[in-house]
Image 1: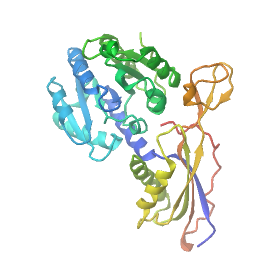
Image 2 (image 1 turned 120 degrees about the vertical axis):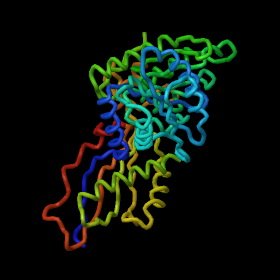
Image 3 (image 1 turned 180 degrees about the vertical axis):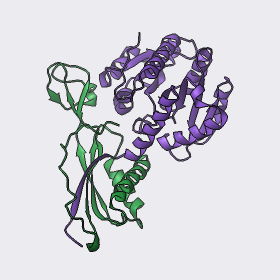
Length: 240
Length: 141
């Protein structure tokens, strides 16, 4: 044995995941599609929102969904019913999707269709407000949902998720009349940790805000397809 | 317990580093990490899962040394730095402005590795390179 050596690395702890995520994104850019990573706590309404959004956007956009779920394929079955190709990714014990799982999902998707024919790929992450924030999957934009029933403190309790999001959807606004919750406080707390993201109030039941949300999605697709860019350098567009 | 997946990712990153020394396997003593407080990583859990994960592997016995990096924000109105407080909604105490700029606290970095090489494969030059500034923002995830 000789004297101890020290290598300065300066490498991200998640470098291995990061490399795979960048590889995925290169494919997305080559296929000229927008990839959105949709995240929230369990039950915030990701699948209900996607059911509405897939139906509303289907006339304009070719879409597919990679559906992360820990144990079941229930969500995938709900979304298939809308008529959009869905690839379920059962994560087992893992409480989030990582870039390698999404890469595996893409391989399955390619058996069913040519990804270059797609305009938009949705990744519905596992319901969890913690770790999906740290594991990039190659998405162009991160979308976080927060339902009004979860309380106004969640952006402060799970700040990393809301800090990382490019767009935060405040969901289930049709329930506001029945709840002792102040939506202005929810929005103020989101803005406090992330002044740059778009914040849109929506209800998959009443349809409130869906057109604004879909407009945001269309704008992101145009921005990404016109100038393929990494998430970091992408402009954070404000909602109308 | 996403620290298990964090550890798996860390092991893959270490595997990439090891390949630089092929075919020699470095004996790693310590892996130095910087973990910001504004991340989803709990340092104690990371150390526990690391110890379990490296047992019997080429990293057996290697310790994880974690430097915690505090969350520091910069108020874009007065340019002053501050410690964002969840109780104050992370706003700057100087101007009551939202947390627009994060100076540090998002780090998830492998800063350096202490290791030895077997005698026969001692490199001609030291492997040490210039240290990086401790709060480099190359760690944006």
